[in-house]
Length: 437
Image (cartoon, rainbow, N blue to C red; front, side, top):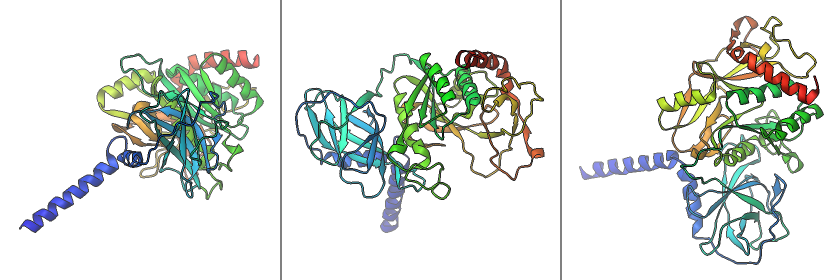
């Protein structure tokens, strides 16, 4: 009898350990990888800091097939930890070292390299480099990563931002929006302005746009919102270093990296807002999370968070409103001279396909998330909720998604029209200031 009982105990312990390893909040995978590297940490004071952090968004790693994006002081796992978000080749990456500037000195420690699981089969993917500051060092100010054990002070260093905040302090912003990425000389001016004004009407305090390139008219729009402090444009020129793909999969768009480095941009934006924003929306510029039974994101999230305690990420059903189908009878044909799509005119959406993948988008508590992908968080603490379409939908105005759906099968949905009066007023104001029309 003892052997079956012992076998049962071993099986239960093994299954429990596996479940804990896979699903423990914040990702035990990361903790094991990180703490497994701590024994190899060495300290070396190598000189004084250059004190000249890079102004570039994308910084190549010297001697390694990797790019650095941003650095954050992140002590959610271990004290004195710096997390560097980057892009790297998933195979054949050499041993890398963190060179951490503390003001008068630079310390070198081995970098723990964690490759994000969502890379969609491309050779390069988003990575986190974890660096632990030696105990005798002061406050980390800047960091560089290279394949050399000793730093080269002429190399570019990244400024280290804080993600740890005073839990009792109010947030500067209740909502921020992360948009990735603008590319292909993007020139959909009207839809960009409408999306911006919708974000602001719904409660966003600031929008972050990762820009590879855009048309000259849209650049004027970006400059306008930036001057008002409502928009931060992050230069996103990954294409200077890698052959970026225009698609989500290598079979549809060959290249080194998935969709212009979208996942790296989303993670960078998430960490940029950990200290400043209660919630972060992760969307494309042709997408708006539209509440159905509320008027703003604030009232919607108060409703959802009250009824779903412990939920930290909320996903919204993607509803494709076909931009070639007009359902307003000309009522909102107000800006024919402005290039781009007028979302008020397109109110016929494709029906939900049962059992098919739905490209949901997210509204999250950024402090609860470690890694995010495009349509779901990869590692987080707390629970996730697929928000019912009766509460809110992702309004996605674009070309057709499912060619099998005939025009007669489209669903009329005029929820967006409840914002038409303030949206028209604000769009008119912006276009007058930017275009003089």
